[in-house]
Image (cartoon, rainbow, N blue to C red; front, side):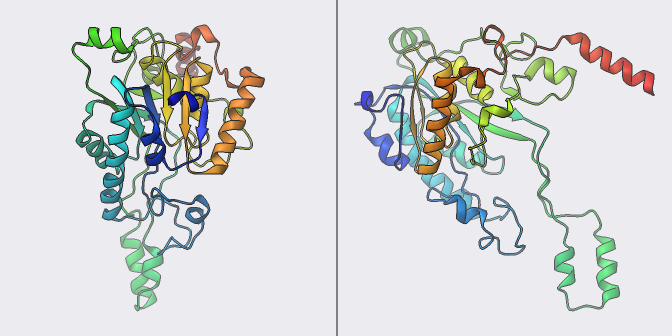
Length: 342
C-alpha cells in the first residue's frame, strides 16, 4: 500500500494518513509536531495564531507565551494516539525523532513512552539566537488604582524582575526506538534498522553526539558539536513557515539512522518539507503528511528546486558533509588578536 505514497506529500490529517500505511514498513520517522502552545493544537490555523485576538493580556504577546496547564494535557492525549500509529508503521528497531519545546517535552516523551516505545536519548539542538520572552509588569502596575508615586516606587522595586520566561537557547528532540525482534544483529539483518552509523561525524571529525549546534559558539563547543550552518537560500524566499528546521540537522539524523537508499523516511507533520528535502538529498525515499495545503505547496516547491539545482542545498562539499571546515588555528588567531587588542 505504501507504494502509492512514496516520494509524495499527503494533504490529510496525520492520524488518518498514518492509519493507511502498512505496519512495519517505515525506517525512520523524523518530525516537528504542533506543540499545543496557545492555539497551536492539532487543528491550528497559522493566520489565527499570528493574529492578536488570542493574545489576551498583552495584545502583542507572541504565540507560545500564554501559560495553560491544559496545553500539556491535551498535547499528551493527542500525541499518544499519534505515537501508537507511528509505533505500528515503524519497522522493528526503527527510530522516531520528534522535536519539542522545552516546556512540553515531558508531555511528549511520556506519550511516546506510554505508547510502547523505548526512550533511547534526548538530542539537544543548541543555538544562541532567540528572543527573550520575559516581560516586565509595568503595564499591570499602570492599571493599578494607586497614586503615581506608589506606581513609580513599585516599578523601581521590580526593575529587572520579569515573568518566568527565560531566553530559550535549545530545542529538545526525543530519540525513541521501536523494540527489536530478537537481538540487534538479527533485527538489522532482517530490517536494516536499529543501529546507529557512527561513521557520521560532527564538529572536527568527532564521534556523533546528542548535542548539535548550527551556530558558531566557541572553540570547544564547535569542535564537538557544530554541523554546517544553513545557507540563506536553503529555506527559500517563498517559504513562510514560522519554524523551519536546519537541513543539515535533518541530514545528520537521517545519516545516523538509515542504512540504504531503500530506506523510507516519514514526516507526519511535514510543514515546509525540510525532512523530505534532506531525505531526497541523501537518496532516501520519503513520505510526507500535512494538513496545511500552503505548506505542502511550499514543500513541493523546495523539492522541485532541489531537483532543478541541488547546489542550492549544498552548504558544504559532499565528502565533508556535517563537518566543520574551519581549521583549529583560526580560533587561536582570534584569541591572539583579542589579547593584542586588550
